[in-house]
Amino acid sequence: MRILGRTRARSQALQLLFQAEAVGRSVEEVLGGEYALSDGPLDGYAVELALGVDGLRHDLDRIIARYSHAWSISRMPAVDCNLMRIALYEMICEDSVGIPVAIDEAVELAKAYGSDDTSRFVNGLLGRVAADIEAGIDVLAEEAHVREGGA
Image: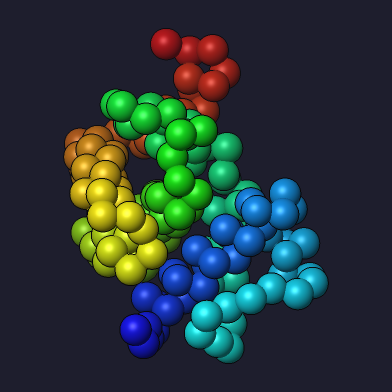
């Protein structure tokens, strides 16, 4: 499958995040050494996404955990987690990317890289987050509030 444009950048970000997680390093450390991409050269947006996600990983994971009704983060496949992290980062931090686009891209990549159930799971969780964002809830600020001991 040939992936182009920003979809390729998201795919590359997914690969960088997966590699960083697999070796227990930061994305910055992975980028500073050897890394593997299925389709290169490395896109600048992929670097921006991977570094951005890596910097907010703990907050993004808490958001995923809060919106996941049946699964804990530790039980989720790394591909699923990283796809949702990328989409959440775009939904929250990238004004140039619409929420429906971020969700659609994550679902399409889930079909390419995940299991048979990944795309439905990713779509459902991101849809719940999107509904709150569209209702005016700042899910990242809400997460920080909960982390600091708020209700």
